[in-house]
Image 1 (cartoon, rainbow, N blue to C red):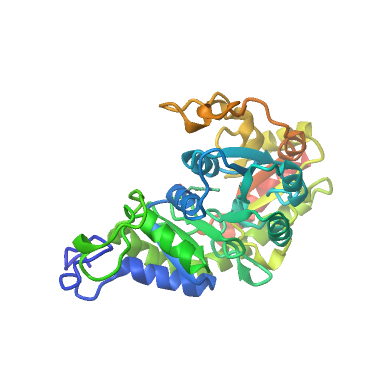
Image 2 (cartoon, helix red, strand yellow):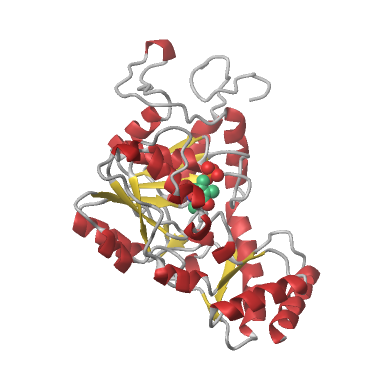
Length: 378
Ligand SMILES: *Cc1c(COP(=O)(O)O)cnc(C)c1O
């Protein structure tokens, strides 16, 4: 590809000498995830924006999202001009299907569960809730590529699934994302929207039709080439993560007060994180400090974190958008400053997560296990 000089995913058919990195990445993602169609794009956030657009989510629609996620999920809703409505999480650390039911109104159009930290929501139950209420289901699978529920890839349960390949995800291409769907029409709307509405019919880009307005969420061929190479390492990455996670789990299990995150199908866990619950907030804070003092790397106490939980999302609560948000034209405008998320607070305030690294040697893992034992003994 570098030799041809064609770094663009569309066109230049002769000059590219048969190298179609983005297309190949899409085809291999389809095969890996057993999805009908895939469109690779510039980021996971772009993927969410594309999925919302393709599914027809727009101004004033309500979209149910979980409290524990990365802010990008909410940004995807806001970019559509839609209103994020928060559902509580349960012990899966993902959206609670019961809570979703309680948040449905006559304005609800879609539900966006997030498979957080490498593992799954109770996705079968969420599918049933959406089917029962006639709602669009978009899975945010940015953190869980390679994870499955009963042997089926996360991201393939809903109308569309979204993935991210940013530098902290399981596989990366610097910046990148993807949407998958089994629905041909949704796929075409997605690939058109992501490229200024081009219909991608024929071999003359200049002569293509534009059935819809869109934007530019294209990935570069350079990024796609890296993504393709990374995807081929996915199985090995997950195998290593699972092995390393089991060692961490053993160390935490030495303390009887520790309970573990609920994983609806443990065999499908991609094992990027180990998450544990302390009996109460006070103990969780004590353990977090003790783990840090003992030199245990990569522990997160999300409840205090300003990336992944609404408690510190002041920019969202105050709707600090650079220009006027379409939401402010609603009558009345939604009030995001107060949320009824007490149940999520009770879970998050007891949760500690630990990052599972790929590069740990056996000796390093033994050392980390020792440090965890020391920290939790205290
Ligand atoms: C990373 C992430 C995104 C956004 O992906 P980018 O590629 O960084 O834009 C969306 N949702 C979740 C849950 C994420 O973790």
